[in-house]
Every structure is written in structure tokens, then in C-alpha cells.
Image (cartoon, rainbow, N blue to C red; front, side):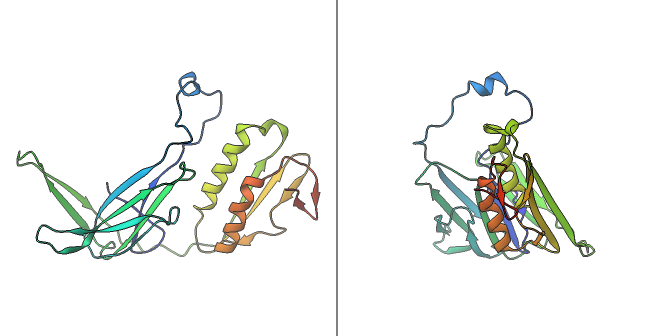
Amino acid sequence: MDLMDDELKGEVRLQLPMSVGSRYGPEPTVLATAASAPSQTRLSITVDIQMSGIIQRVTSPTHPGIKLAPYVTTVGHTSRRRQTAKLHSPTFLTQSFVLTVHADGLDAPRCFAERDPRGSGTVVMQLTFVPNIKLPPIATQEYLFLVDRSGSMSGPSIQIVKRALVMLLRMLPNEQTFFNIFSFGNNVVSLWPNSQPYRQSCLDLAVSYCPRVPFSVHSRNGRPDT
């Protein structure tokens, strides 16, 4: 598969989502009665990476315990454009799996070809164009997230909202961005008195706060009780 561009130049990303958010309304019967994986289930992933340029590094921001193995060619040489990443999760999967590949040549068009191993003579080609568009600078933006924490959101509804909020927080633009989280029940409270710049420390605090969005309507100094 052709990997999506990451936020950083010269980097692509493979992402396997842990779950897909539920839609509004009652859950379909077929889903309500579907079997789910038991807690003893473990995940094993093997990713064979092939790039047109030299691979500089392969990392996983979600699962740093991945193991990297070199790719040895038929003539016994270690390829600099191929690599294998493996993950054997010691616990049940609790978050999406993300793998990032930093390599040369990702800013240029590239093409891969693969022959039919059955010897039919068919060749499959994958061509990727990289448009060179000079976009104007992004103006300063402010994102305000409003979370309903009233009694009607009890149970699975608030859990879905919290997971969606974490996902949206990680997708904000990196530059010229300010953000804040508000929640309301009988009163309204915010994570910060004023919106904060989108930097790693603020993002980490917001992500750690999301699972603790309280149902309590009491607050101290403008900050929600947790």
C-alpha cells in the first residue's frame, strides 16, 4: 500500500486504528451480538518496507518496542531501501498502531513495479506523484473543544467522546495554533483560563486530561474536580 504523508517533510506513516467511533443512534443488532476479542488476545505485526530512496529511520510513536530487521538481497547485500519492522505486543492492543518511515526521495515522483509470481507476464505498477504547491502561510487559528458532561452523556457516550477528542487533538495544525477544552454540566469549566499554543507540553497535558473529564459540576478556581 502507498503510505500517507506525515506532518514532517520526508516522512510517511502507516496507521492501523484500534477502533472506529460509533455513530449516533441505537447500535445495530448485528454489532451488539458480535463476538469481541478476549483480553488474552495479543497482536503480532510484520511490516515489509520498500522505499525508492535510502531509509534513514523507522520508528513507532505509539509502540516504541518494535524490532527492526535488515533486508538481505539475493546476492547477500544488506539493502538500504528495504527494511522489516516487527511488533509482538505483550498486552492487548490499547491504542492505534502507528509506524513512521523517514527516507530520501519522498519529495519526488516515484514508481514501483511488481511481476506476477505465477509467471503470467503481468506487471503491476504503482505511480505516486508529489505535487509541489507553494501554499500561503497559515493564519493564526484557535480551536475550542466543547464537551457535554451532563448526566445524559453517562456510560459509553462520554467514553466515545473522550476517545474522539484525543484523536482530534493530535490532528491540529502544528503552526500558529491555539486551543482549549471546555466542558459543561450545570456549569462551564475550561482546561486553561486562556487558550494555549499548540506545543508538545500543552498537547500532552490535554491528552492526559481527556480521560478525566468529570461528571461532577463542582470546581475549584475554574478548574474541574478530578
